[in-house]
Image (cartoon, rainbow, N blue to C red; front, side, top):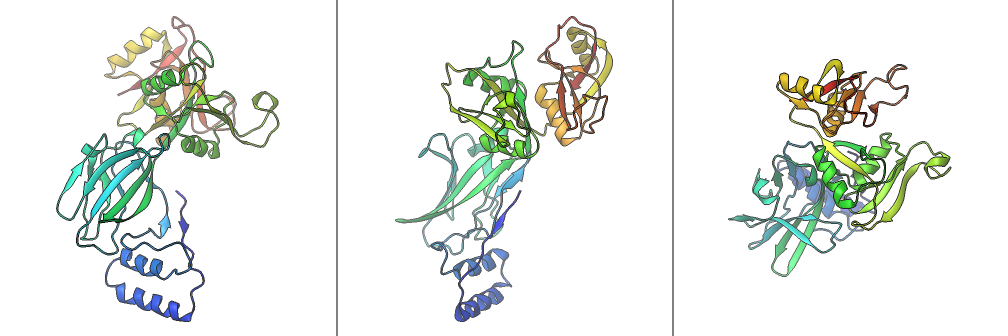
Length: 355
């Protein structure tokens, strides 16, 4: 969400005159052309791009699951014969290319998992931007637009950030029960995906404090601490504690899952239900018991607030609090409170339904 502007430094009077003249001449064109004139005047900065525009503002493209996103890539000039290749970079497998699309001035070809949902908007003749439709949780990451002109090539990178929420997940049997592969599966079962380090870091900056270590998408294990305490890594500074990479088949930890906006809605049915009765109550209203990810999504994106414990589909009992108050969990921060996994025959809780 936060971008950084290029700083133009070291321009002498002559260069400044050329730059200003170029900008004036190009005002009748597009803002992208203005950007290229400014970029070209930066003689003391990094090697300038010949064919592609480096965006003036280095900012994430932010979107939610199910929506569309356009990743910008604009040509400064168009060679006679060239190709544009869009690739999603994989930090876990350096050097591996996940090609999405290759195009030239006349045709294009799609590749891989993202290809069927990718297209080229071509808002104007110099537009090589990529449009991704129906975004999924795993679509977040770094993308590269590469222009290939014979033996010459250059590229710009764009970060796509899926707006969402990270939630820690623990087994019904207790903490530290998941291998990496089991953690991946359990997040998917709760309408989520294993979080990336950047997603966990952002959640920490927003107040996530959790004392149990959990798997992340790259196979490393971490936990976020806002309020340092002896039982959670000692009296160190606040931050992300790291166990580093772990054996994905042997080591066992909790999971940090990531979810985003859902297409449905969550509602609460008041009552004193057993787990089975709660499921029946939701079905009578045309829904089903909500997943943990559904409840976190409603809390995050709809500011859902309900001071009553309710069954979820995994057998846990939780409730979302957007406006913290004394008799609703007793914790000053907003969040989703948990009663853990009570005996499913207990007739004590309502039901959170999803439809």
